[in-house]
Image (tube, rainbow over all chains, first blue to last red; front, side, top):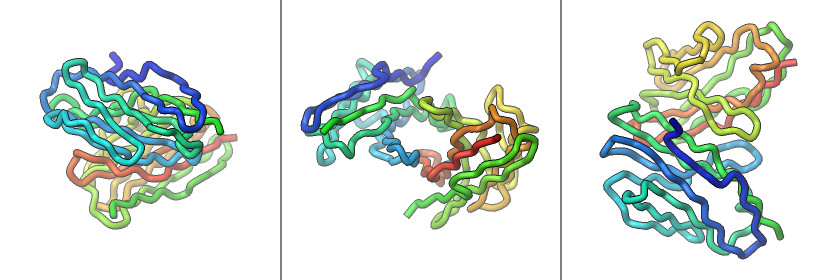
Length: 116
Length: 114
């Protein structure tokens, strides 16, 4: 069964629009970690955020913000006022300590294209 | 800090030959290193987990004899694709971790088998 679901395969927006990427996860662990990574065309994964299961506070970092809701097992990511440089594939990932030795389970990824 | 390098970044080899990919943690000692494979337009799939001085643990469906992993030190892990075939062409990414809570990723190696 898929542990991390990113239902949106591709999103295309015009520059300055906001874009929200959905991530739904599944785990039985009470302690786990959620991540978002950006993969530009160069291929290198860029770490964006890590959130542990006990910290449900939303976070904002510049134009990026994250909404973590345990009640719906979701960890959504919003890019505000998108720019062309935001074009990339974005992966949501789950790390489970007890049941999976902290291995990362990646979602399928969402390709974001920002048009000028 | 927490920089992971991979070498080579790109490699082209002929079918039937073997190719070695190195993964190094440059400024920290990694307790564990991971190897991932990514086909075009797909997600990262974990191939194996490697701990220094012990045998790698392979994920289900990954051939141990095909993908040899050696973790010689706390800063170096190598992946050797033996008798490579065109279907082994892929993007291989390693990561390294100190505390298991966060993995630091290398830039990846693009393998093309002709």
